[in-house]
Image 1 (cartoon, rainbow, N blue to C red):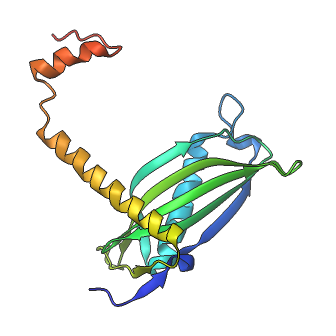
Image 2: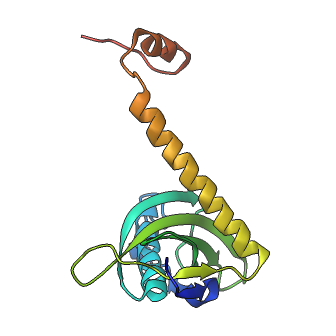
Length: 182
């Protein structure tokens, strides 16, 4: 059992970046892939700061693009450790865009990354325990526990499913799909 504990606030990282025309997609909005790259960077920084080790991305559990980001807006990302396991951490990230001329701030994205702490040999390394100091932190931790349970249930259901069964093939008629097996 780990005897080292750290507060959620000790993991806090904030980064801000001005969105440039070179970051746009074909519709003139900031490219989601560019935002994903920034999300991965802040998740790494947050997890590494908290664990004291090099960390790798194990999974991107949730990325919800809520509003588009415009060229010229200041994007701010705030990250914190929401959950810790033995060597893994779930990092919660909030993305906001600010129109620097009007001061209007929009919540644009919420994301959750699972990061794993590594030692110098590349093996999984233990992370500190998490000290929860307010109800928001407790709520975030409990939400992560629920998400982990749902992820395990999905994996289990995939392992027992019979996707090629006649029943499953026939049930596809309720979707916008045409089955033409050869």
